[in-house]
Length: 156
Ligand code: 6U4
Ligand code: NA
Ligand code: NA
Image (cartoon, rainbow, N blue to C red):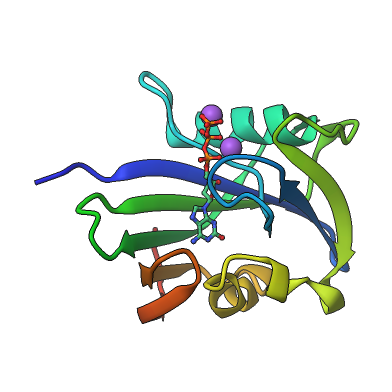
């Protein structure tokens, strides 16, 4: 048994726009995504999500709403990634580019799915409609999804 790798992913949005970050280095480099990273020892998942949001976007959110859990399996790697997804429509601070991320607002009508992780187009509609979800994706390499399952859930 290998413990899951716990990660966070937070999205700042208004009714019409969503803030995405262009990942400049590391895992998911070259793709637009929400803000997030690894949950550190001694941190709550919610606390890690707020910290990563601040580090990568410059924004402080007092409240994050948990909207989904995503499990990622990579063929050949026994460790699953367990990504906790949050949204917020209330924030403070000034959007700031970091070494890791370049933030930019996108109209919800023109989210750049082709320049994002290939799973995002499946679960973004749930997130955008505030429908809690649970997803499981098996990747072969960084682009190809060989299995997926996505469910609406009542509780996360
Ligand atoms: P370090 O190196 O410590 O700065 P850290 O910022 O802790 O890394 P990082 O950047 O590796 O973690 O986190 C990866 C981010 O990518 C998390 O927010 C989760 C997200 N992510 C991983 N796989 C994803 C996928 N298939 N689809 C997606 N987001 C994914 O939309
Ligand atoms: Na990160
Ligand atoms: Na980190």
